[in-house]
Structures are given as C-alpha cells and as structure tokens.
Length: 193
Image (tube, rainbow, N blue to C red; front, side, top):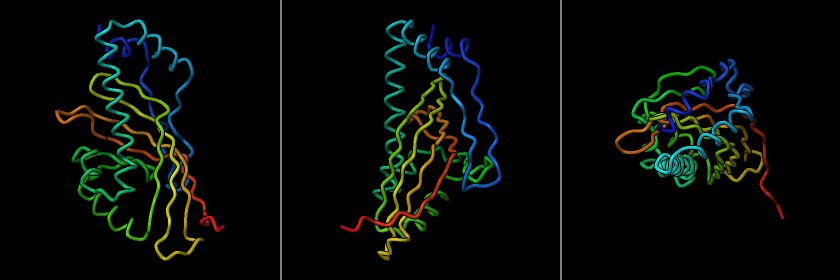
C-alpha cells in the first residue's frame, strides 16, 4: 500500500484555521498535534521499503524547495524564486487566500527588496505531511532586513511561521498555497560594536 493511501486512511485532513483580517499579526496557524506526528512516523516505519524511499525522496525535494525560498530572496535570484511556484498560486498572508500570479509576485518582490541592502531569511521546516501529489509544510520564520540607507532603526526582524501547500508537477514540487502566520515585526537596530 502506498504511504499516501495509508496516511489518507489514518489521518484526518488538517485544515488551516481561517485567518483574521489583520495581515500584521495572524495568530491562527494550523495546529498539528503530537498524535498526528506520531501516526505519520508509525505509518512510515511500517511501510514497505519502496514506500519509505519514495517518502524520503519527496521529503528531501520539499526541504530543497523550502530552503530555496529564502535563499532565492536573499540572493535576489528572482528566476529561482519564480521557479518555486505554480504559475497561479494562492496567497493567504493578507488574511484571506487570494489567487495570485507568480510573475506578478516577482515584480512586487523586486521593487520591495530594492529598499534593503541585505536580508537573511531562515525558514526551518517543523512539519511535513505528504499525501500523494500534495504536501503540507509548516516552517518557522526568522528574517532580518537591513535598510539600504544605513539607518539602524529601519532594520527589521520578522518572525512567524509559513504554511506551504505544495503540488507535485512534472518539474518537481511547486508551491500552490503560501500563508504567513503569527507574524511579528520588530525594529531591530544593527549591532554597533
């Protein structure tokens, strides 16, 4: 039995709690409980070798996708960033999921990031569930933005979690939904020795 079929039988679908209207402090991430984590681990351990290998390959590709997300922004590699998304995806970071164009996303990011001399986006996956050709990933987020005018008070620290829904395509995994939750933005003056 394929792992995705096994998981579908064992686990109820995780549904994201609807986002509140405020995009600056969305306190409602999806909740993944300990029993769901345990069920996923147990089902993987009980699966046949081929299923385990397929799961590990998919998981590795999803980790690469998530790591490339922040890396592409920090390098301003917009071609790489564009390649991580379906042509049309859904963005829930404003409080409601809206259809968005990946090409338009790149235009907006290019303009937005012109104001920063440098950034560092760290996003560590804390949960991955793979169900056939769809995956749900929750990551932590810790981002620093260094303003290009050198004013320390304009530097920011952004924390929160990302929720990604990814779809398997003929080109590999791509982001179909993105949601930034529990977002906190703080003024973070640069370290002055």
